[in-house]
Image (cartoon, rainbow over all chains, first blue to last red; front, side):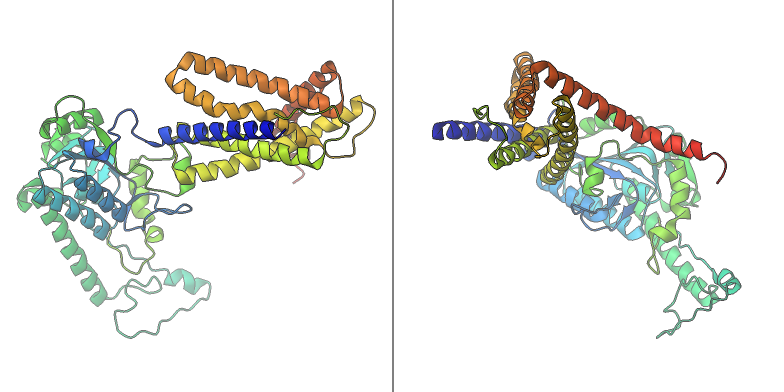
Length: 316
Length: 173
């Protein structure tokens, strides 16, 4: 009887170990297409999908649904430490906060300046505003002819709901330490002084944006400025305007990356951002939305106030 | 796995064994699925909890239905809850761990092994049910098929019933 129990126990342990092994083998996400050993990777794939923000690192129960600059910078740092030959940015983003986009851009430019790593950007459905800001740090940008890009500009949205509140008899007030402390308050009209201040902030951020693109694309600002009025362009139009280097899909971008990084044979690719966005539940569920459409771009700006409830956020 | 005697009612130990076996089976299945879906540690954790919760709930529901049917067939409605002890019959499923590993290296023998496990599980569940409710083979198979059929009908009913209700109300609201 005791021997019987012991045998049962051994069988259960063997089966559990085998199941753990099954999970562990499958756990390596780039089993078929990528290098399993980090030091063996040729191309670091970085996915920049959704709204770019300065969101915290994801936890089991929550996480930024879009692209977190912190996560992206960590991924870039890891790729750099792994001594990859190239970084392929796969961008499908309508933009995001200026600070977050600039942070990622700055990190890419640092890698570009300090290492020999080739940086290539592959634009998906949309790579507008902050999405293009990041792409401009690449040595080479590949866009699909129908990709939507551009939207170079900065915006601060204002709202004034005082008339509406007045109709329902709600009065609001503010006790403030300084004249500009309730800047962008939705409960009153923006004053001329505030308008002037906000305009100067937008202009300064816009200038940074222009300079960043000029530095990344190695183009004079005078060439970029006519296109930097907030307009969106198709990939083909962007190619004609020198905002992108070549036209093609992800496979073409991969080939370009291999050529520029002088990789012989089949490149070993590793996705450094896989499973690093969204809550655990959203990461568990397959086919969660990872694409951006033109409707998303317009709704992104329309809903900016809900996305960024902070008193002041620059959107790019 | 246990060499059960043809006793009357299963002892509390059998119930514990049944629950333990269910836990192990669902954990092994969760690990297998996690590997297939390339999930991380947290994924395994969530999936195991989900499988155990849903697995036990569904099994309890089905086996309760089976117990009721068995009672009707024996003209003696069972009052002692012994439905969860049927879980002991699921023991071959723990072999799906090694079977999945085998499929990775030797696909054909792995698939045959998996098929054998599934057939054996069906046989052990039938045997466990037959032993617990002291029915003959025909009664057991009939009870199991009827239980599954009724469960499917109930599942359809969950979707259809609100429709009937809403349409039945007509335009009075």
